[in-house]
Length: 176
Image: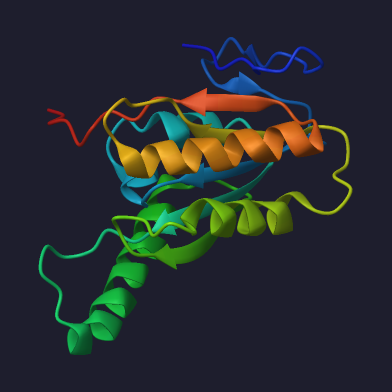
């Protein structure tokens, strides 16, 4: 699969002979994910696409939280989860990857889309240089969290006039 921009003014991303994406060195991507698992799961499309960019700013909307977290334990759990995510990213070996955590709770509150747009705007910058891409999950009917993230990315791409790329989100499938 080759990701292609959804805006006509964009330049397509070409796949190199190595199977990785060849992107000129002046290109950067602002990516958004619902949770860190979209990057860290085996055979992650997000990780594969991020490898093709020299600079990646990844905004993670929410942490993967325990099923029934007790408020007093949330901070301790969040610290341990953040350390585990950092270790996972280190194992991926994606040069130029900067992780940004928004820390929203799932299910997302009503204002989540506006919070995501504000955070993504900070990462894109006031006047983004040529060659900035936005990378967001592909649509998943029936997943309201992902829908909020997608709408925020679409707004950013439209407002800033930057290409919007999509990555597949295979739902925690069992990989041999």
